[in-house]
Image (cartoon, rainbow, N blue to C red; front, side, top):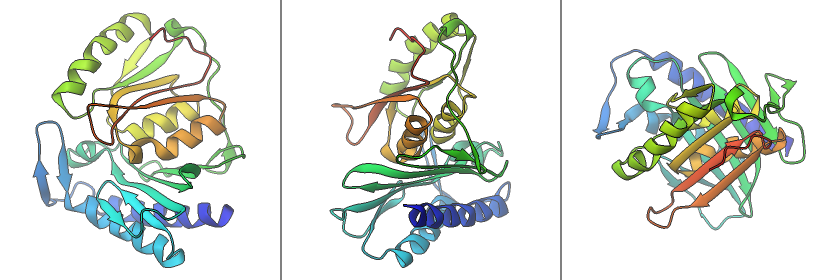
Length: 248
């Protein structure tokens, strides 16, 4: 799997270079929604990633936030979020990333999350310990919610916001601190390396969390991912260090 991870890292770094070159410049808005923004740079970045990966692995497919490429029944499927944290990016907040995962027969076997602003590369492969800029890491060992830092995402729809608010209120009272950082993939990466103790969201897409899912599990944590029956291709996720009792 190393050659897949190497290819993903090269693509993620190229994407990061493009994103940083465009950051804080005037940019084209393709859609402005109530709780989200779609930028042309998202599409350009996914095209860059897809071109690089599928040139090396033409028999593979790509499933991304900005569209799909190739035969989706392929045993190998790249799951890509080219710019996770688009609203942060648009407003000049330097907290965003690129997330790339590879699924084989539906199972995630490679996952990378790259924060180009801080030049932090989380990299994981199934059955191996994950690394952050080449150094192994693992989840935190905090078991008491009162000592924990928890990220609660409120998603992008009125329904998921309404579902998330009571959970946020509960966690604000019970946890040491709650955070709403605006990038699901970085939340997952932060849980994996122990910066956060848990991340909870009511409506999330596979491309947001696929790479982080592998990183957390190979770092010793736990991810509870459940399909939402009321929202197509959306999931609720509880990602944690695996020892904390969130009492959800």
